Length: 261
Figure 1 (cartoon, rainbow, N blue to C red):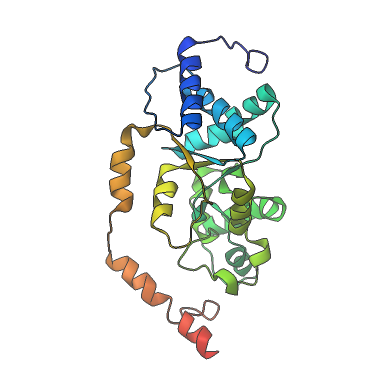
Figure 2: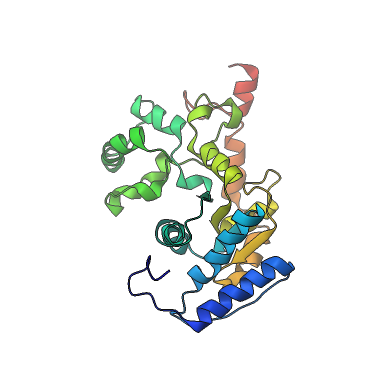
C-alpha cells in the first residue's frame, strides 16, 4: 500500500478493522465497527472486500450515504486498490435512473420536437459533444456551469416517461448498459437511497449479492424509515394520469399507443 499511496503510513486501527472484516466474510457473521477520523476505513474495507470477491467469486456490494463518497471510492480509492493488490476484478457503480442521459428525450430535443427556453438551449449546446461521445451517459462526467446543469432534467432518464422495451433506443440506453455492468461486477458501489429503494422494487436494479458493507451507517436507520415508508402526493397521481393520455404530438400516452392513434 505504501508504494501506491504517497505518504501512506501503517495504522494499527486500520489493520485491525481490515482483519475483522476479513474474518466476518469467512465466518459469515455480522460486524458493527466504529473508527476514528483519519484511520482510513474505506481502504480498510475495500482490501478484504476485493480479495474475497476475487478469491471466492462472490459479489460484494458497498453502500455509502452520499453520492460524493460513492464517487470518491470509484474514482480515487478503487484505482489505489487495483495498483496495490494487482488483482483483476470488475467494479461498477449503481446509480439512480435520473443520473443518465435519455436518448429518446435528447433526440426529440435536437430534432426540434420540443421548445426550449434560452437557458435550456445553452445547456443543450454545452452537452452536444459530450452526448455523442460518452460511453456511460452519466451526468457526473459533465464539467459545465452549475446554472446550465440545472436544466439536466430535460434530458434525464426518469421512470414516468421511460418507454422501456418499447423505446426505439433500447440498444443505446445508458441505464440498461449500467445494469449490464452490474451483472458482471465483482464489486458494486452504490448509495443507501438506491439500495433501500431497490428492496421495494419488483424488478431489482442490484443483482443478487450475499455480502454488504454499509459505510456511514450512523444515519442508516433514519434513511431506512424514509425510504421504506409509503407517501402519496397529488402531483404523483396527476403524473400517473398524464401517462394515460396524449400530452403533446410527440409524447403519446399509453392508451393512445395501445389504440394506435
